[in-house]
Length: 113
Length: 110
Image (cartoon, rainbow over all chains, first blue to last red):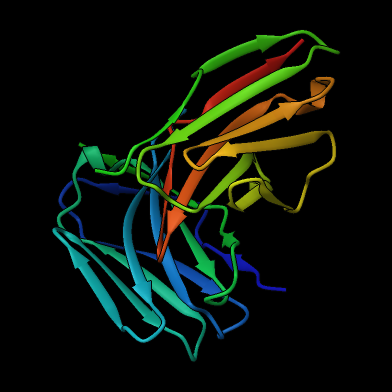
């Protein structure tokens, strides 16, 4: 059964720092991996999706990488801002025919002005 | 822009009441999902639907049922609400690769 882990559970950084959030998964036979952002009391917003054949995806200050063989993905945030404060979740879809996503429990990021 | 809407942001119900949570998507997506999210437990899948009138149990279906009579609408039903169903409920839809979420319904059962 696929398991997804995100470490650390919480992270606090000063504004302007570059940072990396980590996601690891136990079964490397994945179809794709998706990074989400969740603000307190709100739904999830999709940030980036990486297909299993891709190594990375970029959107603005965000860059997500995927290393399937080692079961890892990272989300890199450049020049962090207080507005980046949120919980970041990664989720793995195990196969094209799989309906389910397996979620990590998230990393709560605080960017201090 | 993909839009997934949920009928209520906040809901307070009494134990034993029948509760309906509605979710609507405007993207003609085939797949729709209901999750609940609890502190320390993360997101857990309750039910999903891969087509109209088709449904599958997720990881925690006990105490819930669903209905999908039209492609755009997926309803979660709590037949007899209990206090342990107090939670944040999130609906999502997907076609192809990417999954999109609604804003969530915070349900409190007293």
